[in-house]
Image (cartoon, rainbow over the protein chains, first blue to last red):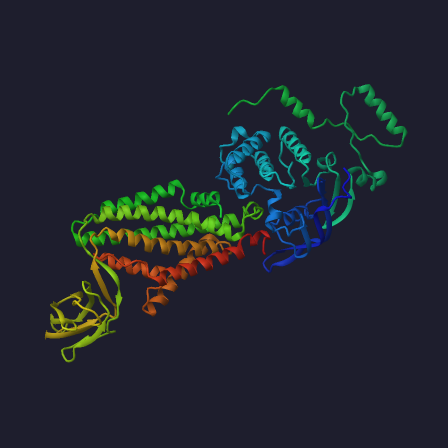
Length: 290
Length: 342
């Protein structure tokens, strides 16, 4: 998707963020003068190892944390401004919702805090609960939810007010195959609505299929950005790609291996796609009602 | 402010099991201490409200602090990412605490009136008037002072005595223009003298003298009460409820704010310490301008079978000060441990 001509939805310049740790509160810098732009309608991936600053960056954009230095603008406003907060949906890494509350109540509470009410809010809650596969557990307390169910709820909670900017921190962590498929379908819809998405993951495979651009962070610095293939290309001959096929028989697979070997590439192995599990579950029929 | 957040705070501060426990304890106390006369009924009312204050205010403050601590630490990603300001979060949580306080006041009032049992006409305190400090009546010089009291009011003066001899005969006289009233009594134990204010306008000149007996009468240093007929002793429930609500509201506001900086147990303890300090300072300056001081005094008055006065302006101002301090601490500390310092 071409994005260069559009005004940035999020504009970050020289972002520095430190946390204090230890008894003496020694500051530890997490983000080192980061520059970043997210354009309207763009799907941006943040990839990096643990502690690289992905979550911190998302929390600063979501106005949960504040920048120590540099500037962050969301829709031209400070992230703490009402206009920016209303336009942002944030799915943090761990569920922050009260465990004694039910899923529907959480969505209703978040919707009401964003000014939604009445039938519109009820319908939106029902729709999202169905989309993330939590209708059967909508009236159960969150304390009884599994990690995967909490992830689904967090993603639904980030989308309840149809935000223009969706921030997802490791949304697929702990998700099972049907959950993954449900989230993918929701994200397709978010994109179709023209919203921008910033999604972090430490797995490139989570991001490459849907991201317009991926930013690789290491130690709070952006070390590379571009499409998944562009990032791989930077690695040169050490780049390793995974291809996905449907309806491939053993003979064709052997032929592909020979072709790759003749071009100097090394065949590393065959691995079934995660989507096979979704298909397998689908064949078993719908889950029994609780 | 958000109703949904206030409901969440209410559920956390006063969950059903806790509400049932408190109701059970207060109901059991009311049953076991039921008064069988006007005097014992007043003491039963006083006892039940005292227990309710100790039990409920401590629980409310601790649970409010726990709710604030959870929001500020483990749930800050949820709270901080919403468009509601920190002041909005404070007042939403505090509204939940106020709703819990209102419920507790209602239960305490019901149980208190059940324990008091008797509904007889009784006086109501309008305000306090000055009295000579530490006055001594040893038969040499009578005490003289003046107060502003309306016709129809009764003046009530607490006295104690030094028993060199078993009793002292006292005469207390009030004069306003040509009008005059007086009361005679035998002082043989700490007691309160009552005297009707004479008809007319202007200041009432009061004279207290020992006319016979060898005991030395002493004024306690407490101020004199101005009383009017109340109609029903049950008015005490409303007045005590207002005092308790004000004190608990101030207490929970402080606990909410402090819990964003320190642990909930410590926050509730520190909030209690601040309340006690305020009361002691107020007591030292002989003023009821603190919520706790006004509540304790109202409890004491109710124990004498008198309907206490409504909370004074100073108590409301003290409550407002506590809420301001609590909200400021909350706003500055909310999410501080999650990096959300602003």
